[in-house]
Length: 304
Image (cartoon, rainbow, N blue to C red; front, side, top):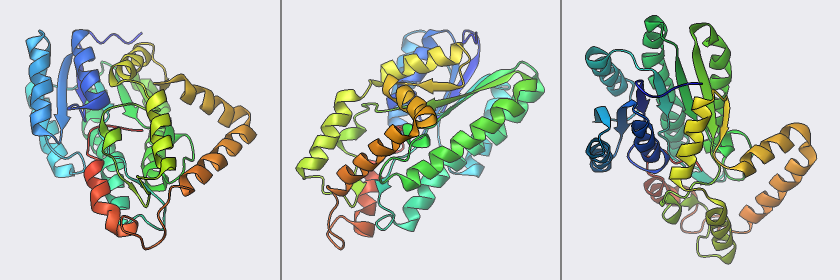
């Protein structure tokens, strides 16, 4: 068992969604928390809420995890003031979906910078001090169902989440000799509120098909609080794969052991997504929809 009481836990994307729920629940378990996010006001609010409840917030700082310089400066301050951490939760991320013919290059790059390079920055700056401290520890990388499955229109997003999955698979063995465990979180649908504002590049959001897909997502989506409880339980039980909903666990089993139902489901999903696509050249498709999509996919740690 990994016990969180008395440990120092760093959580990125802590201002909302899963990250916020994790910060509150981990603090209730008497861990000292170090919080980061890009949203200053929301981060301040969650830090104040934890302190008001008697929790220990060692630091709550705003910076962009995609910036190595900003992350390095943050790591230096944390280590100087509090020493090495015990648990690193790489939760911050953005979500932008779209067909490859619609996805602008800048969105591909931004997704990779935040969802993949962001966790890499945190790991390269915080894991070596954990090794030197000799206390063991835990790395928790929040991937996605899109880090397991070939979901429609998720090529850019999945590239980042499959990359994080690959790093985690290596580190779970590389770091074993240092008693540093690794968990890969693969959330399914989580209703964080972003569902109501997220833009999907190249999709007709007013179409009945799109509304049906959104309604289906909301029907099966877990709350951030439930997702956080399941993540914490997985950490405490030293699980490598952590699922926040049972449908993802079942789907992953079928993918590995009975691939043909998985392939049929992916083909069906792809047809459903194609039915809600805007015609090529329509307003909202391609680069014209990029800004709205990037705005809707705020950096909140949401990993649908």
